[in-house]
Amino acid sequence: MFDPLATVDGGLLAHLNTWDTSAFLLLNGLHSPFWDSLMRQVSSLWVLIPVHLLLLLAIFRRPDWRARGAILCLLALVIAIDLAGARAIKDAVRRVRPCNEGGLAATIQFVGGRRSGASSFVSTHTAYAFAIAGFALFSLAHRRLALALFLWAAAVGYSRVYLGLHYPGDILGGALWGVTAAAALHGAVLLALRLPLPGRRPDETSAGTVVPARVASRP
Image (cartoon, rainbow, N blue to C red):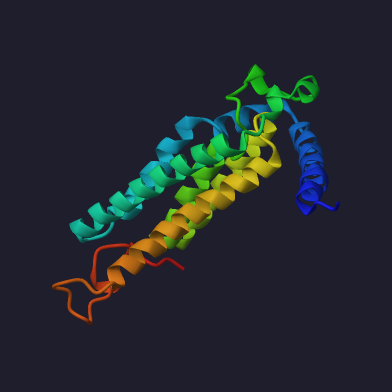
């Protein structure tokens, strides 16, 4: 008897995994001493220091201290939801990292012999980077900052494949989850600000409240 679920599991997913593995081996094999050093830095946690400083600078340019506090709380919530969701997805999917696959380990280029944890999908580094970029786009409406952060997030995702720690599919999944988390929380706050609450005048909108009003729209 025809089983569509079995067909998907045994056919489509197998093909996707094959394509993902082929793309991983191609991207992971493009090595040079210069790129080895650069990708280590891109994937380092130290790079988060200037990224967070840029975000804080954009937030604290707001003249209203209540808006600063509210947007900081929103940023913390985006980060918390993003990281918790990425962990939940990892625990549910339990995809084995390429560095832990017996058939791949001998062919992977490890920069400095670096390995990581067991679960691969989604990439937490990538999800975090894209959540930060999504926050800058949706909640700050700072287009130039958002563009710079999205470019940085893409570089972080590529570095995880380059270092041999993730498949390209893990990167795409992490990027999708990070942007979704930022967009969903931004939308939830906008919706909450428009709900009729006791003591709120009918003409009050999110533009007159503290979150997630834009820091400053940039062209």
